[in-house]
Image 1: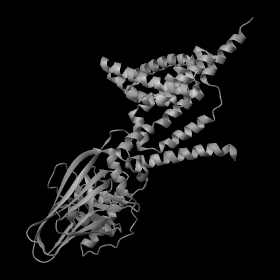
Image 2: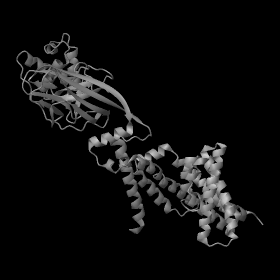
Image 3: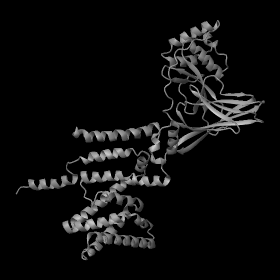
Image 4: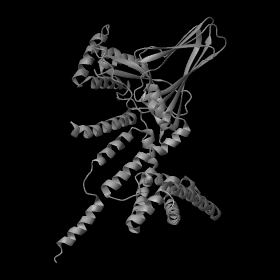
Length: 511
């Protein structure tokens, strides 16, 4: 069992990290790109009426389930009214009440919608419906028409489409022409279709949709037909038979009941207005998560104060840099001073930029190394010597910053962000290696540290990777899994292959 402990742990980390990542990226639409934007639509319904005396009761159907859309938020604007909302099968009812309103009354309902292809859950099949009873000759004509449509269709969806087109192009067809008495009125045509579909025992219903026309202040609702194919409600255009809602409409309510009902009021008027806006995709996803009542975003860095968020945007890049060091040291074979010193230097390069950072790092380490060799002649103990080196490093940094300021090299002023203690330890370590193994090894490890720091900087300075690790911190589990996997690597390093290759070439040469 012990031999499978690490592989199982790695698989567990990978599964957890990638699973949470996919959930947030697909279901919550968390953006994968920094600075991504999302289209949102603000739909506003305005109710106006004149009270006739007594308590006013206003009821408005508002959307509950929105195929292809998700509701980010909603607002009810009604001064002096009490408000309650109740849930139905597919819609909600907003009810405003006032004891004795005076003068023209205006009420608003406003909702912000976000396009979401995953919206629109599976709807339970309501079962066959009871057929409508017709008088003659309509009863015989309906049976004949339904039989004709059945012979030319292969399923519920195609049945509804063929029936709609038969009514739309009835012409001289006697059976169909009996039912075309609406002059193209969508509401009447939809009700006729529902009645005819009931003869075939097919459940159908009317649906009110709002066209999304940006900037329009007086949008007329439209009526669509929906038929249930035993798996879901399929939308069908009642005049031309096209299926599926176009992108520029949003479902508002279901059924043939009026959207607005006003008691103790007259002259009621309902108008719709639509405005399109572009918002930050990350903020939109957060609002969507709140609407879906998911708790996973409660444990996101996005919930932290802004100052703390900016700190963690940097800190969350450190594990990535550490993984790069593991790869370059254990697999490539590049020698460095310490394990995490290159990561900290790479963090400093984020402010100074790579070229200026390498030059400043080389200058400080070279000057500090000269001072360290001088301190060696004073025969100081280890701790006092390190303290002296730290003091010298601080003075060198201050001097270089002042010189850079006078020369107009503003980039070098970011030198203060260099980790001075790490620089001091690097100088100490480099001097020890210099004395024990010679200048070649010391310079080799110093150059290796700069190479690793530059490679780590190349990834840690990526705005794309910073965005991914901050918005999807569960990816740190994936980085941890890869680090653990590299921790078991005991094969040859690439630099060793090159070295041993030279040895093999030397052994193959004849004496």
